[in-house]
Length: 134
Image 1 (cartoon, rainbow, N blue to C red):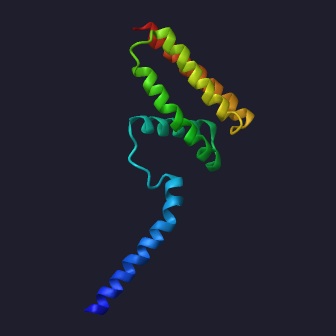
Image 2 (cartoon, rainbow, N blue to C red):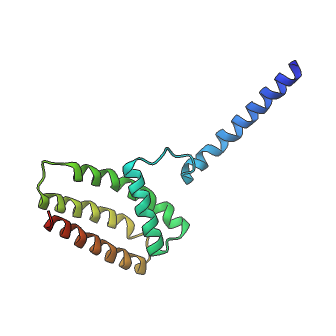
Image 3 (cartoon, rainbow, N blue to C red):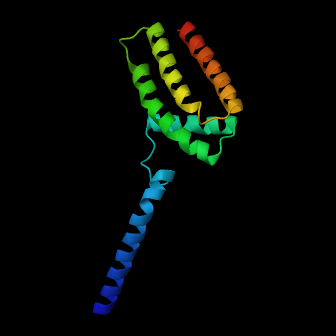
């Protein structure tokens, strides 16, 4: 019985070492990340939309992900800020989007960036329509 306990302990210890060694890679790939919160889910949804529209490579997708994850809480905070008027919000959203675009430009090819700009223009037009309909 002592032998079985020793074997089990050795197996558990080995498994723990393997998991510890592979955890950084899994976290980097997002396989072990926490369940997506609202803003993370929104950023990941945006990443998937971008990936499909721009035909991002896996490397580009990995580079774009943290940029969108950084943008999401800023946009969420701005949307929920009741102290700002619609025009102030629009201007600040534009600033956040411009900062994101500046970070994306070196990652995307010229054709991808042109398509991204068109997507942004459509987003802005939709936002303006929503503001007019309120």
